[in-house]
Image (tube, rainbow, N blue to C red; front, side, top):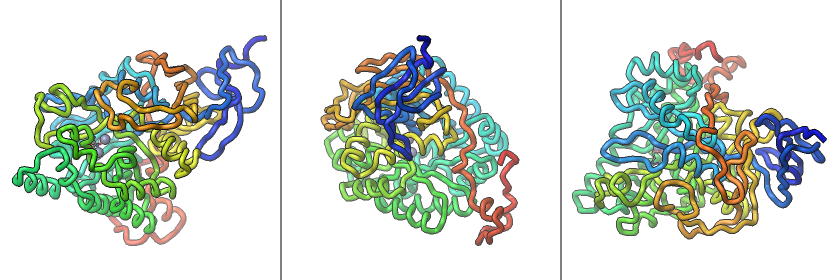
Length: 497
Ligand code: URP
Ligand code: ZN
Ligand code: ZN
């Protein structure tokens, strides 16, 4: 008999952000074309009995091959980064095309395409990082790039070579509002960090553990509140990235209580690591990231925020630097003061298994919440749904088939990134993706990487509905729109809306 489908996945338990059901999946031309029991034969078949069949993960915050100054280099490029993603059940990644101060944003995007071309095993989109919002960037480059499918950008409130002041942030948020993009905000108060760092250095406190003391929770809390206020003033939603604990969460809860569209992201490091991981001699540098991991009490608050819906997405913030060598955690091959250690930790491959094991299996979050947080919501937030992030007829057949009982002790040697350590060394998890499909093709199967470099496609993003301002909704419904000044009402959205 002539096969009806290219591939049929049979007998699995399929979960989306809303439903869990026993159904077969028929795949044709890289898309899901049928759901139902007893589907006609496929040219290829996967028996998923006893397995979970989930949308492939969308990791909406990872850094691959981002240009670095000072002789530093990210350990993962688009090949090793997306290979590692695939082996952990992730089928779409969104890394960052970063503008270098003094350079054009368009040039950064073009350069980032050259870095990605021909290398990726899974599909990818780009966020932009805006570090130099000149008039040309604000008036020409950003609007043009947003129209071409780069519909999200990150702005920083810290790091000397990246930070924007409040006026610049307002200017960027106004562009996001007008052109329908989503702004992601790294919220830490840069002057507080500089002042604390100076004091710590003067006292001779330069070991990696002092990184956490230089960036206490109040520094994140203040910047989170300020970012929320700036978003309210411009009347545009924002995403607060890598939220680390209670005090920042309190600010976001306050914003939600006031009807503001503030989205929040957290990462496994704030659920599984604490500041004590930095207190390990120079090896503590392996866990230096910003904001720093906090303590067990804060971990519990972050878990609560996942279960009660405060968080929209969980991303890895994979920022890969090797521990040994001269271009990573030991710049120039030396053990340096904490403020010179490049920030970031690897985690693109472990994001989903860690969250599944400690989140779903323990009952802290449901399987459907897991799918929402790690696949469906990031796809929606960045204008990639319904093509990505769900299992539905017409969606890309991006699927992770999980063995929910597989017991794994995480070691760096089993991972597929190009970093020489994992912060999660020795942790035991239950549940791991055994097969990952991107547009119906196996890229990870039975413990082997079977995808090829260059199969992954670039995805232009739509303007996300979730980036819609509030006032336009309310004004459209004829409601009073509060204290928003008239000047802002004139900051109309462009015609795309
Ligand atoms: O420490 C971190 N998070 N490094 C990566 C860059 C960023 O701020 O996301
Ligand atoms: Zn950041
Ligand atoms: Zn990051």
